[in-house]
Image (cartoon, rainbow, N blue to C red):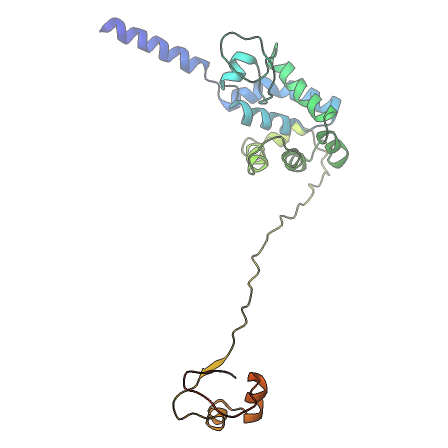
Length: 225
């Protein structure tokens, strides 16, 4: 029993040791993310946040076994896991390939002319619109990570930089007003004169609205008012 407990404790220690905190992940990868930003003009904060989101801060299986930090699909030669995701020699290679995808593949390559290297919100929303992820909240999640860990501090923003303001479009449901047809059900003893007096109209008006040629009415008959 003691031996089993010792083994379990050892395995638990190994698992915990392999788990990397987001803070440690940022410290490890921020230098390379910044070098990519300087060379390619893509926010370091954006690159880091996407990697954190897609790789669970480097703790996902494809990050640990394939060095894949951005969820990029493709062939791999890894025998440790069966996966539809591409493998890389290193995490840096995965980071470089992400930037390469942004630069060379349409429509991502159009984002470089739309957003500068400091506009992480524009980049996140632009990447989502280009179809990088299926989730409608993907950009919001990436932006939330940037704010939570203050990754924008790595973007080397000028002191006088002013963040672009993006107006979120809200769509209101149009309320369709239904036309209510005001009608009166003829009761026994009613005639057009009585109905006209009750409803504040004239016999002539009632006859015109209802296409009546005669003033005769039947109980149960519907009259438009």
